[in-house]
Length: 137
Image 1 (cartoon, rainbow, N blue to C red):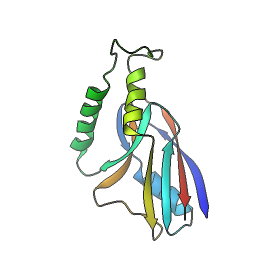
Image 2: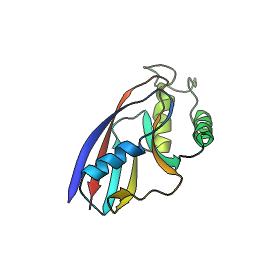
Image 3: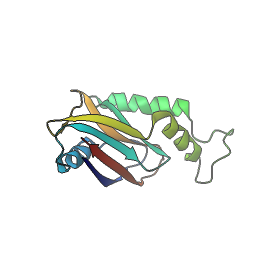
């Protein structure tokens, strides 16, 4: 059995935004009790990640690391048609990934105590992001 839906999430600009609740509601709507929830973002300048949901300093530190991995406006970049953050956002997306999978049990996401699912926006400005949630079981 499979279920699929698409979420539209408006990011607030660069940084993380928890979407665990939206994904959990989509998984619940599937009617599937046990299986896998696959979450995929249809963009090349943002990511999805599972990380600490208790201390926001963790997510701030991840942003610090991302600035080191792929700094905005590096003169070595050739792709900058949408601004100084353009290529950096693509690089960060490749490094952080565009999908996550979570086991489903008892109709609930089986995340750990301190885990949350996050949309990680790599562009400086806000964007409307499409996220496909597929539940199989």
